[in-house]
Image (cartoon, rainbow, N blue to C red; front, side, top):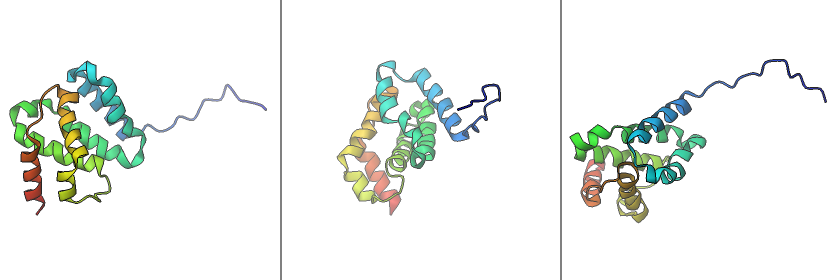
Length: 137
């Protein structure tokens, strides 16, 4: 077998979504608690490898990266985060609003985001779930 080691390699085109996700991760990692890095990497960042989730992950991380909104307008931030999380974990939008609101795993994930990214308590889930149910009808 003959290898041409002197010919320049053809570079793969950079993926703009992948680059944008990496930039958002760097922004988030500047303020997020270091003790939860492995959890964030395992539960969120690694989804960038799955084509179905890439756009949803990008949108989700955009919301997460806006930490100043958490302090400025926590209710609207929680609502945006709820919708973004719903879109991320249900990319095909198969689950009904009622199923999302009653799903204990979704409730746990919502609360986990506040702990994992901000080291803070989440707002009462039921308030956001009630808003979501009303907004969907």
